[in-house]
Length: 110
Length: 114
Image 1 (cartoon, each protein chain N blue to C red):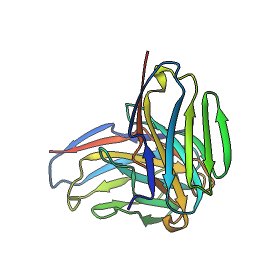
Image 2: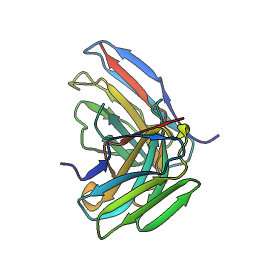
Image 3: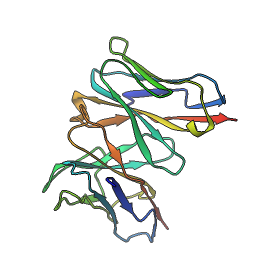
């Protein structure tokens, strides 16, 4: 079962480009999280949202509840943005726990 | 500095041996989680605990055991019954349920069974 689908799986960009990573889910959710995993394995929470849009620095996350879709945008991308970006959702059937997508591996070239 | 620590970062064990992975947090969080990550797959929940002295099985609990005797600590034991234990293990914590609360992750332990 794949409640959470991310696209693309891999993404290569040039420094300065605008990046979009997509996340689609198949169930009604109570929250959606965007996470960043660096090459060493550590994971950092970027956003948690249940509606609308959030912005932090060059990162923007949006969610469309009706379409069951969220996007993570990176403006003016930089090589230090290279990481795996993971979408995770919480829904009624998950006992309040996170269900994770497989991640999008982003590589930003200088 | 508040955070989550996991030790060791790399762990090697012989097949058939039990091994315990450490997870400690000083964030005063009630909830703690153990996840497993395999190449090409999303994180999968092994066990979680929402309060001291209580824990619940996640999606892939078979071959694992946990304890939660202290709020700060949530060790995971990988037993010999786990058929494919080689993986990257991540511990996380949050104030409460993920519906409303950010999860904080430890640096992970990479377990290799030889």
